[in-house]
Image 1 (cartoon, rainbow, N blue to C red):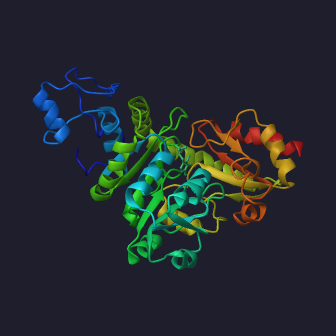
Image 2 (cartoon, rainbow, N blue to C red):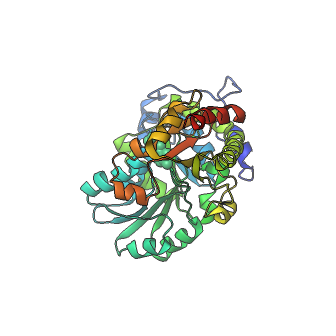
Length: 391
Ligand SMILES: *Cc1c(COP(=O)(O)O)cnc(C)c1O
């Protein structure tokens, strides 16, 4: 495939190898294993002398199609698809780090990612220091002689803080560390971590890449050398992507660009409207000039994304009342769907975070998070308006 193509062309075309049937749409290979023409060919496949499929734990044409397409869209050399976003992060760390090495991670990353670094990897002797996402000095101070990896998400969830990826890539490389960016919320349509110096990009394909809330999946993208070590882990521990899910994600990638633009447009309209509501104390959305990092958002992102948050006056009771008055918004912690979702982070996703730490992260009792879907904007406003009027 031509590497000069732009993202939208890769999204629709890259990675497809038609079979003898000449099918137009991508074929789905629901097969666990592959047949060899002879004993000699089987031996050659297993020894690696002949390239080709053996077993779908580590190679499947539909999964390979997804991997090539997403790698091209991110502008990375190679992609490895995994069973979930968490499997992508776990395989990456286990593939690249060993016991006694150290990670510096933003404290504003996905809750389960915190648990993985803080508990599971710590148990294996890989220690993590958590730092405030926007505090560059804290990142610098946390780096030790044994630090190998810096890990971040930008924009952060739920209060949409940003970090300068290029500055952190420089810091990482000055200390012989790798920088991994979880690009799940921005997607390659809105943010290009490799062009800003990142070494690895992580995805939960479950979110915008599928975009319609159907399948769980993930991916790691990076250069050939790094990904070889991660592939070795996948091959022998098995958190692989199902070919069915890969096929669904392929269809999702084809419309990613137009969906992200529509998500951004709806989210900006809703954020601007929320800022004018008397019941709303503050709105968090990188596309608003009132966002403290508006300038960075304009430089680093090609759109402000589909997620926003706001503080309702009156704390938890008001927040719950607004949520419970919605007819359209789904009350669910999921995000990145064509369906708009609404969440009260303080009592759900961040319910187990100690109070002081939660407030420090900007997650107050009145905070409501919205993943803005593709419904008509006026219907979404009216859905929230009902709750505001009840206060
Ligand atoms: C959901 C999510 C993950 C985890 O992905 P799963 O597919 O649920 O395992 C990781 N990072 C971010 C930013 C997410 O939103």
